[in-house]
Amino acid sequence: MNIYAVRAMYAFEMARTARTLMQSIVAPVISTSLYFIVFGSAIGSRMPTVGGVSYGAFIVPGLIMLSLLTQSISNASFGIYFPKFTGTIYELLSAPVSTLEIVVSYVGAAATKSIILGLIILATATLFVPLRVDHPLWMLAFLFLTAVTFSLVGFIIGIWANGFEKLQVVPLVIVTPLTFLGGSFYSIGMLPPFWRTVALFNPVVYLISGFRWSFYGVAEVGVGISLIVTLAFFLVSLIIVGWIFKTGYRLKT
Amino acid sequence: MRVHGQSETDGMTYSYMQTILKIDNLSKVYASGFQALKSVNLDIHKGEIFALLGPNGAGKTTLISIVCGIANASTGSVMVDGYDIRRNYRAARSLIGLVPQELTTDAFASVWATVSFSRGLFNKPPDPDHIEKVLKSLSLWDKRRNKVITLSGGMKRRLLIAKALAHEPRILFLDEPTAGVDVDLRRDMWKLVRGLRESGVTVILTTHYINEAEEMADRIGVMRAGELILVKDKVELMQDLGKKRLSLLLQDPLRQIPKELSMYPLELSPDGSELTYTYDTQAERMSIVGFINRLGDMGIEVRDLRTTQSSLEDIFVNLVKE
Image 1 (cartoon, rainbow over the protein chains, first blue to last red):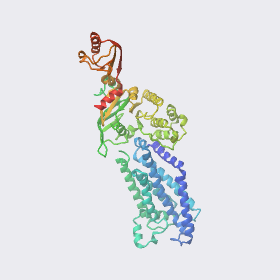
Image 2 (spheres, rainbow over the protein chains, first blue to last red):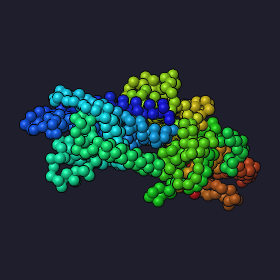
Image 3 (cartoon, chains in turn brown, yellow):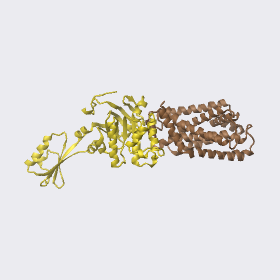
Image 4 (cartoon, rainbow over the protein chains, first blue to last red):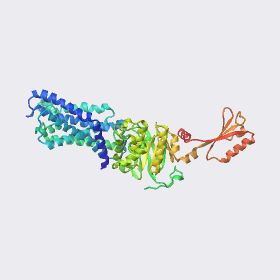
């Protein structure tokens, strides 16, 4: 592996985060804090417990996942789309770097930012609600796997997009609804049977369920299934990225 | 290292020079069906400055893009110092630096950061001394902490060259390097390119400025509609295709060209005071002497005379017109 090249790409992307600290870190933290205030404190104080967990604490994993998913996609898609938009992609394509190195660097940087953000939100959450993490290693594993997987998805979107509108459309029209309907703010057990079955086709349900299990030891679906679905998502994304670089789809003419 | 003999298009000057870039039967058909390159063959010699000329849409940038890995070839092969650009892309690309036509730079990074990034991207360990040398050679040292967005167009052009030189390439592609650059800066760039050649770097440039090619290139290739229609040593090209014009200012104006001179390629100015004789530089010199003697025999007195030689621009215009 071309270590200097990977380091250069990763560092350059991380430097971009530092330059855009407001959008990258501060803005999601503020919006998540607002969720805690509105849902956790204001509404949550009038809600019963869910699976023995206070509503405010119950929504924490879902909120972290919501930010993790949207930010991973946004970071990675913008990270690769921007060089395409400005034309600086020529440098990446003409460099002696492999697909793997490009993906490791760009997706790695996007995932790093998301993980940092997830941990910051977690720390912020402790200011609003009492929290416990029963399985911290699994929590980190789900955090890592989800961040990497959705950064890959973002990377694919960034390559596919040929305009800023397309860059926004997938996160807004697909990912955010899936996350909201994936049990961020409720247990899918609260849904009527038909909608509960429909919800099981939403992959985000498995991510949030597994992640929530690592906090409170309770899950909507088996943690093993959550892990398998997350890994499957990861592999599919990886295969698509590999195909993109092999064919030069939307990268090379 | 491959050593090759005299190629079909070359003169003796470049016989037995090392080939650093070998392009064989390269074709490119875009998804739209447009054929940008038609079976291009080209050998670039180590250490030369090669100018690729051609009108817009001739295929110059497509050719460079394929060699550099930005576009995929439809058919054909490219070898860079013996390395295939597909099978040994790492080795091939690490030898190449590319200065693109468009001013595409990271707007918000600093000059130092973006040039250092380019070096790292080509898997070279950090070398602040080299980056400093490059920035100084391009008069960008004072701007090293500035964000790219604050630079003028000319500085951005130099920055792109700095980025391309950051990893110490052996082959440098300059795609329209002096487009939109003022005369002083253009001359600075010519100086820089000559300096690079002296340090052993092979330079391939595309340009619309014929005088740039005339000034700098060792060899010239002309592209037209995706075909490389000519590759020649610049001096030979000028000699072979250049025309000389002998203008004679007459003591007494002529009303028309005398019949006795009809065998010569002559033009008479509208006022009849200037007779122009056009001839190939390879032409029999004695015919000129014969022509002047003939004028004397006919009593046509010459007040003054001057000769001019066609520029590369004239040659280029004639070639792409054909």
